[in-house]
Image (tube, rainbow, N blue to C red):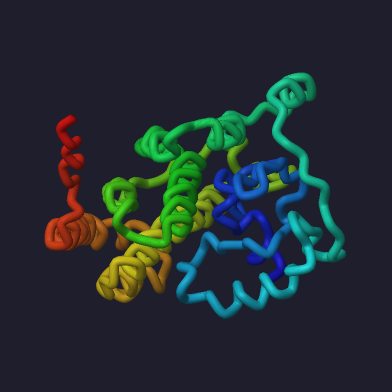
Length: 264
């Protein structure tokens, strides 16, 4: 249970989950390396595995529990953990370079930040899909609205039925070589991070069909049957795409023309 409230299960540590991403993580919220992400946390925790509106009470309790810490804290010992900014020089010198962490450490240097989100989308690499979904959710939560996020959620929906692929080095399996069952479990880490983002979009936009998307999979989700779920997803992708676009059009927010510059 503790790990569900650790940095591993927080969207601010975009490149890791409970089963994905070995070694150190990187927190965008605190601009800090996470040496033990499975036992660190903070009051800004935002769970990957479930939409915020479902677990809001638990997150507020967690925030209150760690309110006395200004930054990252040890989840078990309740002691502050010093912030350590990412150093590309250090990771190369110590053989710890990680391309996903390297990319995420550049996030604050990208202006505007939405360019970075778009650059992370696409493909089937499991860690990149996890990072992209986490980034989109961070962006939407920060803005607190659907209006600036619908185009990112549309991209998320299009990729929902893509089957994530993992290399052995992607897996948080310790010294054990990950087998097919471990990879299958890791697949669900990615899927629920993405699906929760779509549900959070439904919350912000007031679309209950998206808010309660988990009710629409005809039992495939309850059984964690990926093959059966893909069949349902192929229909849902188009249905949800049309729903999001239609709502944005009705609200006059679907790629509106730029405001005309007043004549001098």
